[in-house]
Image (tube, rainbow, N blue to C red; front, side, top):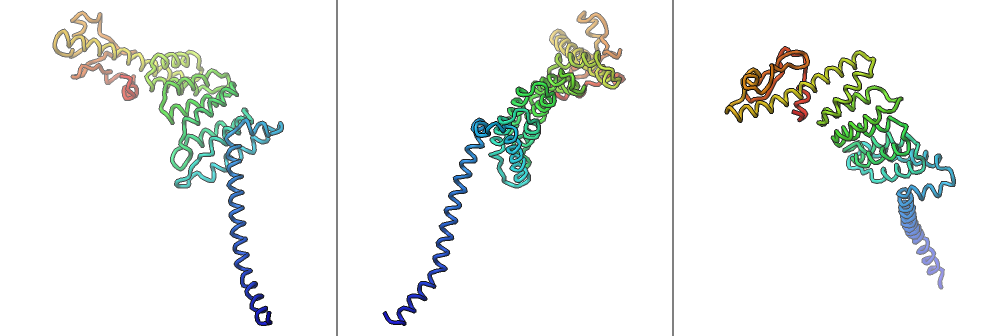
Length: 300
């Protein structure tokens, strides 16, 4: 081989070095990507198995739970407010966290918020939020705040007034719970149509509280519920009167004259009821009792 040929071969080899480096770099990137994908798949598999994480914790359950809870917060924080972001791993993270440490209150209380928030604010999964809080209640029966959180989720997120009232009522039974828990139970039961439940709670509040403001509110609500009962009964009598006489009664006096009631009915404040053209009973305009809110919630 001539010197010229040798030089040509050397320069050709040198020219191929950048290409070789590029090829090596590309191969390394593919290897790294595959490694990251495998690691991520393994991590996600582990994340979805709380018991597996617990078995690997070597007794450091609480410490590992704190780590997972921190990761859950970071995971949520990196996605909240980001258009189109998904929160698919949020539930597995919270599942593992609370499996490792069933008494980690922030994971239940804030985790439920993360799960229940809609749009860009969270996972939009109130069902999972409710499941998480129920798990917390089962593991921590003395924490009235979890019962109140459950009531909040039922009331605001899924409009399940019956279960919301029951959750707040359960919270109120804890001696450490504030009085507003029972107040909320009564209000929501009333809103959801559970008149007898609402009446029972308001009566208990009235008889047990020493707070004059709450006692006054309870009395007002009990009077409103009594007036509502009266009006429903009068409406039934008005319908019966129309069947018998072909028209609605113009006043409760006509019911008296027809022998359907013994005397002029009055509301708990002492004011007589009257009928509208539609045959529906009304409170006297001078009466201090207010049942408008009850009527607009479908109870009348």
